Image (tube, rainbow, N blue to C red; front, top):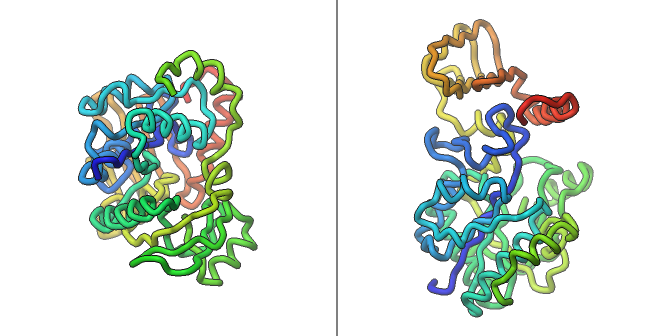
Length: 327
């Protein structure tokens, strides 16, 4: 594994986690996974340390988040924090990071991870990654595929081909984010998994803004001549909304996931997060309600049904339209 490097993609805005997630403290800096004290980005790095030491971990993030990212990881060399001048989706930043790695080690094998996902069985996760690395050594681009539990239009789908390893398969076809009808077809069919020189500062400022904003899925994976997939079963969650945060959080006997001191009377299946930092004592109480998300910060309060957690972005859009409030 001495030639194995990792790229962590940590440039997302996380607008679906407003008001906790803000421009200078987006989703990956928040403790939204199973551990209420561990930011998602920190958990991502910790999970892969048995496979890759800090000096071979690169984090690609926005220029406005570079300092906070360096502060979170004093053990990772500062040169490994790659600050994108503008957001251009995943393909350009992965291309830049892999070029940096190739300059350091022409024989490198590169792993790419999102910064904001949660994993329950970390040993099984690393086993799947190790099998993917072995496939990469055979000149294949390898991805991890998860068996879908519902027809979901927000994920890409991988149609399995021939078996080539313990839990790995050739990829017959990759389809990024199909419509509902195609997603239902894939779900019911059972054959898909939900899956230079080092002087680049000036070049980044000139070239990065004019690059197309395109995902690695559309830009590379769909066009790859040799693609393999490893079946993963390790309790994965993309932590995409406050609904996901409720699913991952420890709950009481009535399904409530509550911050310390919150009172819930005849209420069930609620998520309450008191994220204030002002230190003033305050009681949050729920009476006779079900399935709510309640999030309080120093300057905002969010209340909505859990089933509409994806609609938080509508609040962010409205705040941007009005102006004058931190998003």
